Image (cartoon, rainbow, N blue to C red; front, top):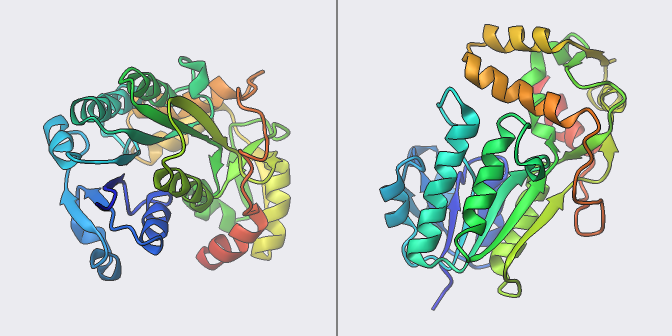
Amino acid sequence: MPKKIIVTTPTGHVGSRVVQLLVQAGVRPTLLLRAPEKLDAATRDRVDVVQCDQGDADAVLRATQGADSLFWVDPPTPDDDPAAGYARMGANAARAVRENGIPRTVFLSSIGAEKRHGAGEIDGLARTEELLDGTGASVLHLRCGYFFTNLLMELADLRRGVLRTPWPLDHPMAWVDPRDIGEVAAARLLSDGWSGASVQAVHGPEDLTFTRVAEVLSLAVGHEVRAERISDDEFRAALRSAGVSDGQVEGIVGMSTGLRDGFVPEDERSILTTTPTTLAAWAHAHLRPAL
């Protein structure tokens, strides 16, 4: 009998790559979507689609019956406290894993979840890790670096040649292409050769400072980009002006304040954590056309 692999957030930057690779591997995955109309027609013919809101525990339980493997992503939450919202989603995943007896789950987590507390909205991912570990099933937490695609939310500033950030400009951290995360996730979903609760970081090809990122982007997009550090309060003001609620603002700001001063990721860079796509290659292919 073919394996039943469930994929959540299948139209996202990571999930869409997971789906593509599973289909190319000959699997017909089951996709959980709140809005099935977002799925392109070519993919729809090669997958099974279940309309499901991951915030609805009973719906998640029904949608994951008979699953052999689950790719779980805590989706964006409308909660004013995003950490609590992510934890609520994680509780729904843990209940489904436990009650449906799902043997293996790959969870999209983040660098910083190892702190458990004090990393803004990442605290909700940390709680999801704990809830999934508590099921006793085999679970792999992918603790990922800073997504290249976060730059797509800064297009207006980048057009003006500025990369604004609350992080120290000389602070090195892991940057990663979400498509590469999808490749790691798909490989694990297709494999039966692992068990137990474990962590695997996904660090991208190298650690980058924002000063270095600006240099890379300057070459890739064809005009100078200058990194500029802003204060936490300036960051808060920018988020509020974009319509983000106060609680959500603190969840976002808390990620940078909690991970920048003396924080060292628990998982060291190694052959297991290093993925191939460089920021330069990604920016030339995806950011330059958007600008």
